[in-house]
Image (cartoon, rainbow over the protein chains, first blue to last red):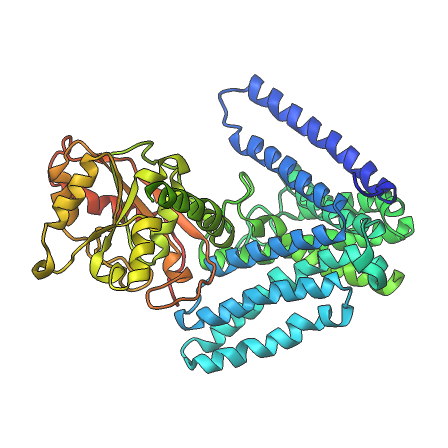
Length: 319
Length: 216
């Protein structure tokens, strides 16, 4: 490597454990499909293979330093916004408005790359919020105006604003000298902490729900979500957050427990609110970019809620 | 000159078109790709955008690129010298005259001849691009062509989303995912009953399998 990764030691340790965890999962699924060849295990195998790729890309981007991580999240925002615009109804007259909406992505991530917190935090909710309706008025079509402007704003907040909080975590501890940074250090650890907890929260809510799920929470939106799954998942996430807090973050163990419980609940809300959108539109998945998982948005839905929550708590209390 | 054109064409698709199609637009296959491995073959698809041709060509492997010929209107693509050069040498179109008074040869003859030379023809049975994301009536020309070359496989492909990305009359590309549906090849010589109806039925079937919003 052309740079010193010793400051990423905690990150490496956690990735090591994840590697082992995924190896076990791969082995289990392999044995499962060997012992029960009559049932179809394609989806499980696909899911696990996709986890390998996602973990690989994520790890690589963290080790390549903050600029590469920011670039990768900009790409994720782009794909997510494209998925969003491809699945929701948009108007032909708004084509140029949508183009401007895409242009917010490079700007938003540029502000992150120079550590300009003030602009990062108001660019989408203030400037883009005001500019989009202005550009739409120039197009001059009033039919379905409110629906269209609401749709575009929602998409920008969901796929650009909230997700960019993930990228800002990398520069958060070194805002001032971010441009000269070759290694992410403690910022990368924060990002890993949040992504890991959110994704494992999804998995553990699913597993707890499968094992003990009885009482449905939102049968009209997501029939597989149960109270047992939610409680089991949130507690698991809380405990894991507690265990990892002092390795990856500046938090004390009991702060970690609290934020873990918060991440568990917020992840659930993010998941269900995207489910509500999919129900409304009448689709099951947002795409099929990630085999076994669906689209990018299907994988990032929980993060859209956990990222701002975790980011602002950690920034307010520790930086 | 010919070798230079062929190299230019290869570079244009490998370096510019394929990355744009894969990264900026993004393809979502609705089923496993069913594509010709070699010529002669006839690919028929719905037509909404100039991007249709680009996407169809980039679906095919680069090693058959020199055999691919999109059938295109001469009155549109040959009216300007620069565009004509580009369309014929880089995109590699087979120009046909749409109006019968200007035709020296029948367009169907021209297409059939290209197929006999082992080309992979890209043919839009709707004739023109029409309204974005609306499929218009298919024209009968495709059947006449299949009749002339009954042994050539016909691959129907349906694309959704390109009419949003780059509709007729607009020059600004706005990215939307393109959903691609493939269908098993049809052969005129094995077809029982009405070939035209069979093609139409395939397109209806493929269109129904994509459930995504049209324009609001």
